[in-house]
Image 1: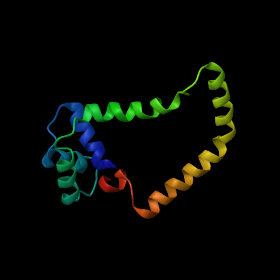
Image 2: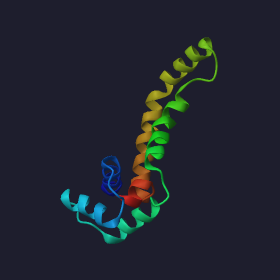
Image 3: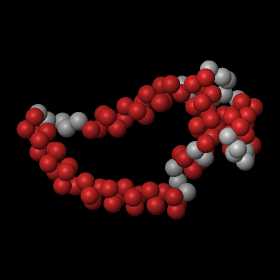
Length: 111
C-alpha cells in the first residue's frame, strides 16, 4: 500500500510520477524498495488521472447508500439494514481474511 501512498503524495505535491521520485519517497519513509513494484506502479498509472480516480473512489460508497424509494421505503430499508448490520460486519471480516489469505486485491499488488 505504501507504493500507492507514495504516488498519491507525489501527485498531491505536483511532482512527476516516475521511478526515481517514487523510490525517493519510499526510501525516505524507510521502505525496502522493490524496483519491480515501482516499475509496475509507474506503468499502471501512466494513463490514469489520479484526481479523477480518487473522486470516483470517494463517490462510490455514497452512491450505493441512498434507498431507491420514497420516505416510507427509506424507513423500511433503514430498519432492515439495522437488523442486518451484525451479520454484514461478520461477513466483511471474513471477506478481509479471505482476501489476505488468497493474496488478491489491489493493495496486495502494489503494497
